[in-house]
Length: 197
Image (cartoon, rainbow, N blue to C red; front, side, top):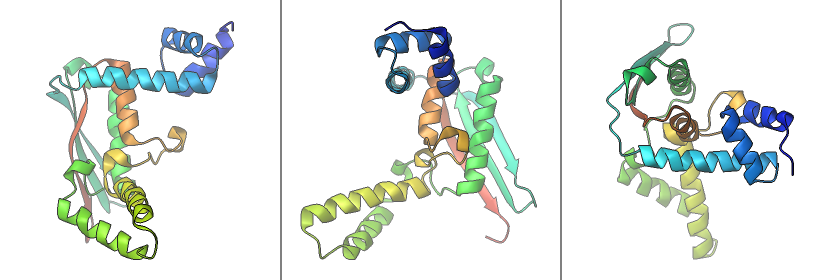
């Protein structure tokens, strides 16, 4: 199938990927827009995996005070160079992360940060709720609900609160940015303050 400029434009608007990357993805998937989006996401994951071992010691500390001065957020997001730390897309991502933390109130950065005893307690409660079902079904239900639990309490697992991201997780947006800017990036830590909490 012939890849047209309109197809490339549409894919670029949906993914924010570079023109040549969009053209290659469309060519590789026979012009199927949805498959091309998946192709770009997979290549972004591969690029991010290659960058993961590199040291991210530069970056910024983002801050946000919610309207009414009742919620405040500080987050440290690291990258490899000062050049990327000054990049507008990197700074927009940091701003997005501060808004996410203010809105969704995650308690942890990633599932690995959740205390094991909390996970075990949660599994016990969830298993007790479906104890009348067969054991193999209970295990699947518990695993599914633990994944949902992570989506509520872990920043990287949370779907973005911004409607233009169509429920994509923060970790996916971070992976996309790593692929686009070509540097390892890490959300190092965050703090959320709520008046009276």
